[in-house]
Every structure is written in C-alpha cells, then in structure tokens.
Image 1 (cartoon, rainbow, N blue to C red):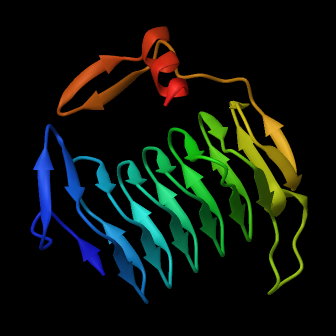
Image 2 (tube, rainbow, N blue to C red):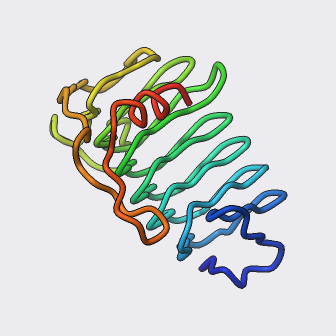
Length: 181
C-alpha cells in the first residue's frame, strides 16, 4: 500500500498530513508525502513501513517487517517491528508503553518510552551483537530489557535541515523542543 497526498481521507494541515482513524494493510506500507504524517489511530503493516518523513500515531505503530523513517517515529502507544527500527530523528513511544524490534534500533537523536526496550528478539535466525544494538544520541527514558545500548552523544546542533523548502539551522532550542515531545 502506498500513501500519497491523494489518499482518501488524508488532509494537509500546516505543512503536514493528518488522517482520522487507523491505517492498516497486510502488505508493506510506503508513505510518500512532502510532509510528515499524523494518524489519530494506529498504523499497522503486515510487511515493512517506510516513510521519507516523520510518522506519528495516536495509538501504536506495528510492522511485521522493519520500520524506517527519514524523520521521527512517535506513537501514543507502543512501537513494534519484526525487523529493525530506523529513524533519522528521534523515536518515542508514549505513556507506559515500550519499543520492541526483532533486530537493531537506530536513530540519530534520542529514544524515549514509558517502559521497556527490546532489540534483537529475532526468532527466525541467529544474530550477532550488531543486530541487537540500540543506537541513539541519548536514551531519555525507558529501560533496556534486552539489547546492547550504544549512546553516541551526537546531536545535530549547528547542522541544517530542509523544512518546507527552507534551510533551517538546528538550534539548541529546537533540540530541546524535540526532546520535550
């Protein structure tokens, strides 16, 4: 399933897209939008989920395969992938929920959740340490129950990002605002 700006029920609001309800497919879910996507319900794919920008769900995000986002991955509930989870910004599971992945979890920024984090819980093959690593700049909240935590300490401060066609310098205020989400 491919979601583009013409997807039925999708509304563009201030540079991002909103969908009221759940988005579910038994196949791969590919999100091809020029802004990030907010879904009031859950996002569920039998295969992988791939988005060029951020994805946010009011409830949970679940993929039978991997979850990959060029931006952030944020859910009001849990985040679960049968394969790896990869994010260009931060990963955040809401409330008292956790994050689990069959393989590694990787983000350039922070990871936070209310409960536990599992990486490398693969049941279909033998894995090495690199496939059960949780890599992030900093773990803000949550407990690594299974996996190897690797905090890089790197932040994107001083770098630029393209937002709605404009190059914007990443400031400490922006980084603090993202961490507060």
